Length: 257
Picture 1 (spheres, one colour):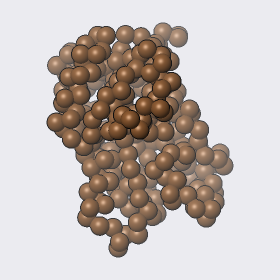
Picture 2 (cartoon, rainbow, N blue to C red):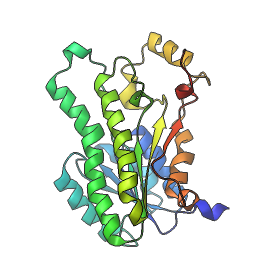
Picture 3 (cartoon, rainbow, N blue to C red):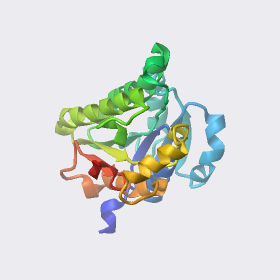
């Protein structure tokens, strides 16, 4: 059974690898045998956080702006040249940003920034690396990161909620689009984890509200996402798992009042 989760010989591209959740999920892919291309916007800032992954000898940092198709095309070529098998087998998109700006105060600039990072970059990454997987002809696994805010939306994070709803739609659309090529597309819906982009809105009142709506009565540990990402990337899910949105949320999505 352990071979079902063996990623040896595969190359994973992790967009936003410098984030809290991205680095922890990349760690799991590496631990299960994958080589990981850690794509970040600012290598100098990210390198200390990713040093333990680089030390495995199966990871390397690549620079790219996730909202630039030109950057992604360039870095895809660099990754293929570095990859032991000359291709990308797994795409894990973890880049994201958030804001708690009140609705009437949201500027067009803020809206565009959040939608670009959270939604447009998913579309661009799936265009670039999805096409690469199609042309390679070896199938593949694409994993997006959504949020419990995707629906029903959370209060205070209007643009973030809208962007993550878009991620869900793209994930399911592309699952159908890529299925004939043996490429699976699935999403993970995390609950509340201590990631950088949500700390700004976690006032004591907000924490109490979250705990009241989470049956397990706690925040998630980022390592609790590792099982889901390894499963979706591996042979264990290769047969028939596509178009799925997997909740790892402590029961948050099962609650109403």
